[in-house]
Structures are given as C-alpha cells and as structure tokens.
Length: 106
Image 1 (cartoon, helix red, strand yellow):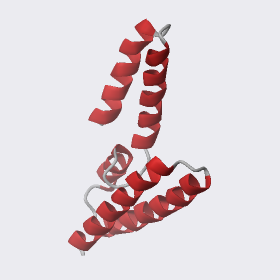
Image 2: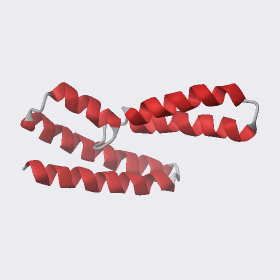
Image 3: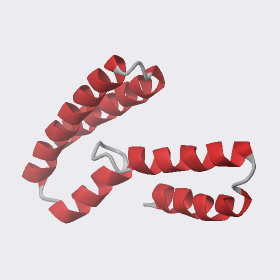
Image 4: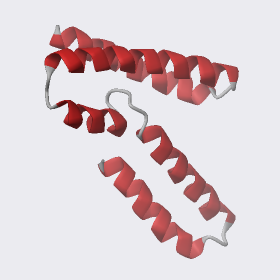
C-alpha cells in the first residue's frame, strides 16, 4: 500500500501548484498509477489486499494466482486493442512473476 499512499500524498502536494501544466500532467500520472496499482495482479497492491484477506490459505492463493494470470492476459489484450503498448510490457513482466510465484507454491 506504500505505492498508493505515496501517489495520494503526491497528488495532495501537487494540487497546490495545479496552475502549471507539467503539474497537471504529474497529477494525472499519479491518479493513473493509483488505478494501475489496485489491479489485483501479483505483485501489485491490489493482490496484496486480496492476499491479506485470504489469510495464507494455500488453495485460495493458488486459485487467486490463476485468476491473476487470467486478469493479466485479459488486460494485455485490452491494452493491445487500445494501443497502449507500454502497459503491455509491464503486464507481460507481471504475468511472468505470477507464473513464477505459482510454480513456487506448487
């Protein structure tokens, strides 16, 4: 949750200087980072929140990792259609991390 908290803090601070164009861009970037960070994909904060709710139950963790992989694949397709290629590379890396984590718990 530190990433989300930092983004919120930056938005609050940057709002004081919102009249500058680059500051508006930074505020928008931080809002997008919050949205991206709460996606329930391993190792993002959204996954950490769900993981805390699961209470270290290995069966549910494995099922959720499969769900995380599915969400990653769906988002890769969506971002490809929307031509947002930068996020595709990030999601491919997160997909690799999810698969590696799944291999570890098996």
